[in-house]
Structures are given as C-alpha cells and as structure tokens.
Length: 302
Image (cartoon, rainbow, N blue to C red):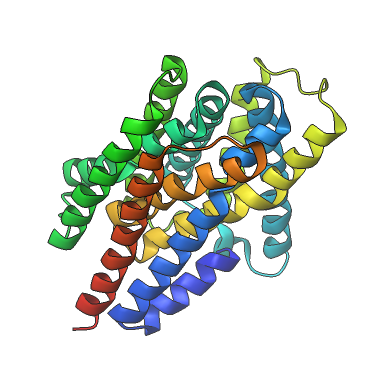
C-alpha cells in the first residue's frame, strides 16, 4: 500500500462522511490544478506528441518505480500488492488516454482540447450506471448539466477552425478517462501509485515506435523532466486517490476546472488568447464545481 493509499485507508476507517467528502474534493481539486499545466508544458517541449508521450511515460514510470521500491523495503511485500488484472486495465486506460490527450494538445488549440475533455463527467456517469449501477446524486446531475452549458459557451468561441484530428483525439481521451475512473471505482484495492507507474511504462512502450526520443533540444528535455518526474505523477495520484471518497462522476466533474485554467496558462506564456466565451463559460464551470462541493459537504454532514 503506497503513501496515498495508507492515508486514504486510515481516513476511510475513522472519518465521518463529511470529512471523507472534504478529503475527496481536496484531492481531486489539487490533482486538477496540477494537471492544468499539462497543455502549457506540452507546448513548451516544442516537439511532437509521440516524443512527449514516450519521455513523459518513461519518467513517470521511473519516479513511481523508485517510490515503490523504497516502500517495499520498509514493509512486507504483501502490503504493496495489487490485483494484477485490474491494475493492468487501469494502467492501460491511463496510458491510452494520456497519449491521446498529448497528441490532441499538439494538433488543436488548447481551449478545444480541454473543452472536449470537460465532457468526461457525462461518460463517467454513463459507464458507472451501465457497469456499476451507481446512481448519481441529483445535485451531481444538475451540476453536470449546468457545467455542460458552460462548455457549450466555450465551444462557441473556441472550436472555429480547429483541427479535426486533434478534436477527435481529445474526444477519445475523454471517453477513456470516463472508463478509467469507473474501473478505479469498481476496484478500490488497486494501488494508485502502482497504476500510475505501470501506466507510464505502457505509455512509453506504446509511443516508442512513433517517437524519435534522442533528437530533442536540452530545453525540451528540461520540460519533459518536469512533466514526467513531478507534474504528471503527482496529478494522477491525487486524482485517482479521490475515487476512494467520491463517485467516478464527481471526481471527473473536477476535471472541468482544467477547461478554465489550462487556456489561461497558455495565454500567459504564448499569448494564445481564448475568446470571451471561454472566459464566461469557464467561470460558469468553476462556479458549478464550487457549488457542487459545498452542497456535497452539506449533504454528507446531515
């Protein structure tokens, strides 16, 4: 059991529903804030999506692998085991969604990719209902509907002239993310850290054939190191840990926050100015996330 797994297991055993919801919301929100820099870092790498996918996956695997080796040395091997097939399924889903999203960031506008990504709550709710028979709370369904209204506003100002291939890859990543969170919800015993590590390794393996990993500049390697060793492992562990406390649809709802934040970081560095609709729609999305969390805290404390 990893560091985050130990924390979440302790909280699950002793905390009341209100504290558990607060913990899940904090984990998911923190993970989304960290991952919101993803598009900016991909752009700063100044290379194609296959090279980014290969190095980021490899660095993620190395980082998490070292952490797991350290943990195995401090506790019995049985404490770090995870069911093999669910672990491989979660890892493969994470690898595929990450590759698709990286390619989307290099083929279409940042706002386009993150707007499409914000539809993930709909797919999470759908797959959770089909497989887990997990019904969403009315407030979550309402939040998804309102947030999607904000998404439509963003789409109206950001999808003009977008690259179709990039948009389709972003949609594919969104669907896979919905399945990913649903599988995590179904198998809470899967080590979140191990899933990120194995997912990174699979990401590198899948991208290797299409990449030219030794042809980059030192600036590209610097940003890849930051992405693969720090940003993505931290973001993925935080978000997947949130599924221990919240439903798949609720966790994915926080991903909507990236719709607002990611274009801002790209605008600040590259001057890629999102439309007014992006700012208005993004504000609606963020407000929806805040209200949903507050209502969740209130209902779980009753």
